[in-house]
Length: 571
Image (cartoon, helix red, strand yellow):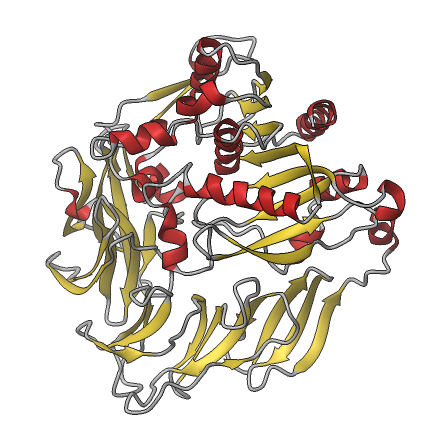
């Protein structure tokens, strides 16, 4: 239906940045009546290729290498255009939009989302380069002409979401409008907009966040969503009025799920029932059919009791959830996996801190996934206390909490991890001189930089696939949190692990796949150069045929064995 002009141009495929960083996995969208297809044209011809060599292969040449159009921080992004074609074929109608490229017009850099509205109206969400301004554009698909219907602008950044929900025409006086989610109050909440994009008022409010819209019943005037109204460690299904009376105080949403922990809901098309996928620290996943009217149980669909022999045999103990304070008084949540006192005696214990610490991720929550963290449970069974702490900058706590990390990667996050370690020592839980860290990706970065910055507290670290210098990571992620390298060279320098290696005293194990196309192996190689220059010892575990995380079963077993051997020897 479409024709690309050269091999570096694609139609209907999401580019690397869209898939990896924007959670946009597709590059084409069917209209609601299935008569048209909107699609992206991606031109990567101006992006220098980054070559990855398959050093573990017996062959050489083209089959032992791969080239990636990888946009490094500060460099150009791919060009993206948006076209529409009839499902029956025919000429392409190009919308008045071009994102990315080398022309330095950073106002419309990223095509983040594309949605169809009723009446074959096409909308696109476009971010500027610094990600502080998002525009929602409405297009006439015949002429390609555009109109701005909404602008979201925030000092820190605008987080992308999938809450844009068009409303049907002819149902109510708000027909043709849409639901939008904004963090303009500091927490993501839902707002009703009319057909022209004017905000009519909030649907939800408060110091908690909406996560996802699960369903909308326009006839009854209700919107269903998941959120953190009952606390940031849980997720529940709620119902709110779609058309509130803004002359009165907004009514609180009604909770429809029962039981503490995490709930994922899927609504039926008749808006009568929902399927509830529920788990918690104390309960493995179960699936229930519940009434959408009041949340009452209709039928249990699946439940796995804790008395299952293989679960009992593992002797899984859920971690204890605790609260501590950061150095500015902010509440931080931690999870404690304590060794069995009857086997290992009372604390203090050798301690390992499991870290991620980066944006968009929350480790500490009331979920079965923490109970079945098998590495943590294994270490606990060996007499090691395991600790997790969600530092400032992590997810599900609101924009102010998350934006603490802006221009501060390797600063505030590492300092909060230090605060956690000091709290463990003060409580008599951690043994001084026997505290280590382990993490992967951003967690690998945070493990390494924390070990280097605070050499008198941390004894060892396992750093998996670490970003060691942010100038070597991609545009979208890096610049969102660090800005352009040209605008903050001092911040980029300080946030590099290499800047701190001269202070390092503890033992460091680096783990990396050599064909990692996300965090390239050069991050580890650059760190090794700095370690050699500073005459600092290190250990390395390389997987020549693995990418960002070892996938083959044999490689994962070998990795866990080597990590445990390192921890046992150095902690």
